[in-house]
Image (cartoon, rainbow, N blue to C red):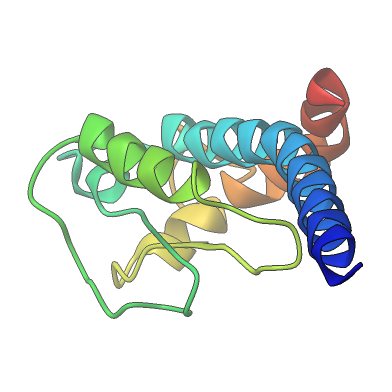
Length: 130
């Protein structure tokens, strides 16, 4: 009889894992899209701002500027979002000293910011994947 209980427990665990994975996928896609939108909306002068976005599950990692391009930021984000699981916080950040100025409209290229406008669009982004 104990053999049957173990099989039942394994089956329930597998069903829960499958359910969780199925529900993680649309949110991963939405997060990925939203984070990429922030990068795409980021004003360009030298390209440093677009290249300096990072993603972390553990808070701000302290990176200040990355060598590379916006595509490097996007690759870092895609690596993190594909691991995302519901119930975990995922942070998009940039530690550039002037990123907040850009967000607050200091550039004519993004007078309404990058994050604020993406947050407003979040419900429509999520609805595409649900």
